[in-house]
Length: 73
Image 1 (spheres, one colour):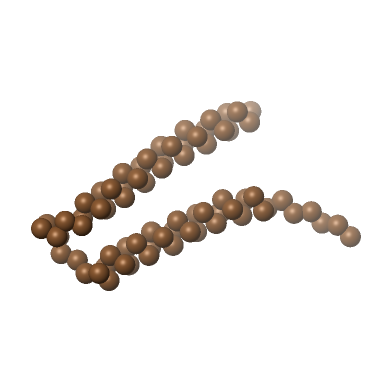
Image 2 (cartoon, helix red, strand yellow):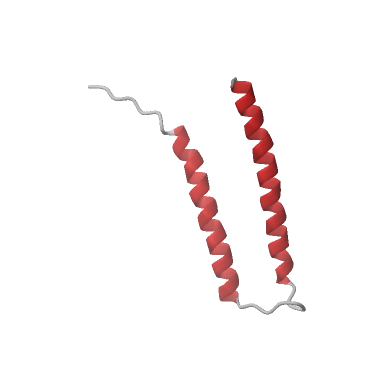
């Protein structure tokens, strides 16, 4: 049973990570000023939002490692 869970994690993690990487590449395509007009503030807002979500999700994984707590008197 543990192997299935590991395989499922790997399968889903690879697919979802590749999807995210493709989306980031597509976002980067917007950097061409010949086609698009944007401000530095807009770019900062976009990347701050992405970074905040990355930090939040990374924290979720770290919290799982520390979740096992033991109570003793």
